[in-house]
Image 1: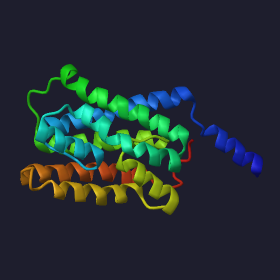
Image 2 (image 1 turned 45 degrees about the vertical axis):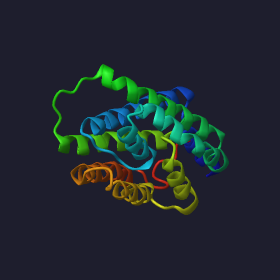
Image 3 (image 1 turned 90 degrees about the vertical axis):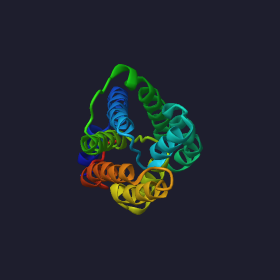
Length: 207
């Protein structure tokens, strides 16, 4: 029985190449979703949402803001999630920041339905986060807290993320017009539906 369990564990262990392609694919999906949100004048929760707010308020580059905002969270990642998780998360955040700035130059969108931006962008971000989670990485910030709570308490990542994100979006009402906040809530629901349905403790045990 122990030998069978060991074989199963080894069969689900990711190689470095698999981790690398997952980090690239996951961050690309998330960056495409962020590009749709940005084009529609929306925002979302977590450190991405904070970076959006500062970008809209100050005009500073979103990618730079996203990278800097995540810096204080790496200490928690190192202590709670381990060195490998932290290094992969740092790489994901840096790549996400770079892609967020590069995609508007590589991809020109002349017309965008805001409801498609909310739902399609949200699903892209959720899928990207899911890929990263399954390779023991994240997009930093509150995602680190969410994953730690799931590992330690067994709380569903999607539900915890939804609660935190809703609080951030509602706090933005004094600065962001309510129609954009409403669309952002729709986008947030799409993100967290993807996570709540597909990311459950014990369902996917790769390392």
